Length: 127
Image 1 (spheres, rainbow, N blue to C red):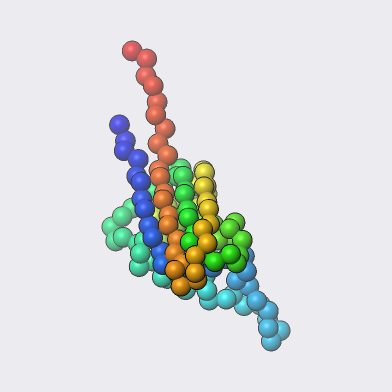
Image 2 (image 1 turned 30 degrees about the vertical axis):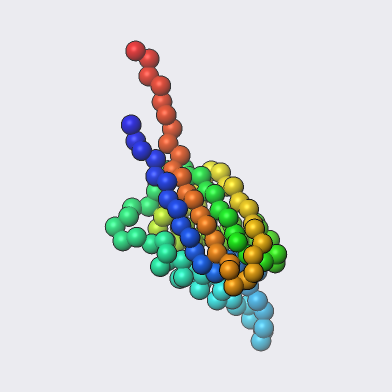
């Protein structure tokens, strides 16, 4: 029987919204560095050398401790990218279920809790 992986991570700081990362100015469109900075910060808390990414379907539970600003769904997008870029999962298409919530705290107390569970199919055999 295969044992499902169950991974927990805690990332300090406020998770930025990926949707709001594009800005215009001086006749061009450019990306805000907040999302990339958050991915780089997350790397130190999530990446583990030698750990192979999960290849099968996963279930994601995420809790954002933050102020009341920003949409929850845009922050989930950032977390999906973080998990992929930090080599926890191979592709964010593997995420089959998402459970997310936001709890209000002061901005300086912001952090994100992530629980990722590999979904393992159990097959019954006759005989």
